[in-house]
Length: 259
Image 1 (cartoon, helix red, strand yellow):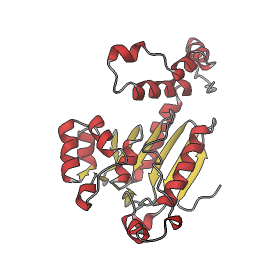
Image 2 (image 1 turned 135 degrees about the horizontal axis):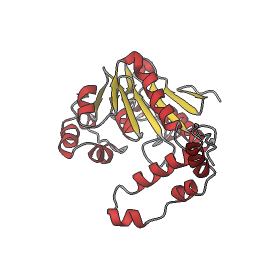
Image 3 (image 1 turned 90 degrees about the horizontal axis):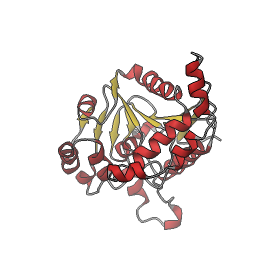
Image 4 (image 1 turned 180 degrees about the horizontal axis):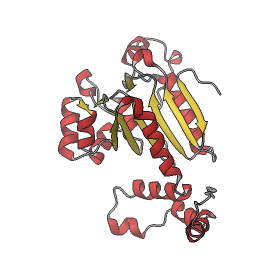
């Protein structure tokens, strides 16, 4: 299916998703949100793709966040003429397949919130990050106020949240916001390298690892270790759980089935 605002391609078990509104620094508006939501659900439900890479078109921006100009133009119009905004990746979407953000420039507001909702962030060396919503009378309500303090040291998160200040890719790496910083020409190869390393692992084991880690964040250790997770059970009962030890004993690469 062709999309107007998002590019979507699947190859070698990797879903490549690109926000394609470079003329507005890949800012998101309801029609783009709708397309992204459809694509994310397709990725989640397609058994043939195991990892996704999300990026923005061009070399200027991953996403500048909400399209404020579009929002301003919609004010005062009949409600029926507006598309309701969707949370997309930031809330209301559960997917245990890993998602990598390849940040190719500005990740501002909802753009940073989208990256925060991914599992791994690779940044081009010219990338910049911010949650500037308070500077325009808004709040980072798509998860930024919640995810940022969970992913970086609290004082660093509060400094960004309370001032709306930008940080560059190097500072983002220093505080643990991103996994790797590379020159822009190496961004997608680096993201694909991470994706291929994930693909070296049994897919059900990867999904179980994500499910347990993310679901247990707010629980005491004793509670989380005492719980049984569907993904963990599925991985332990899978064909791949037998293939892995067999391949190790036979000194060959495992052939994962994803079941």
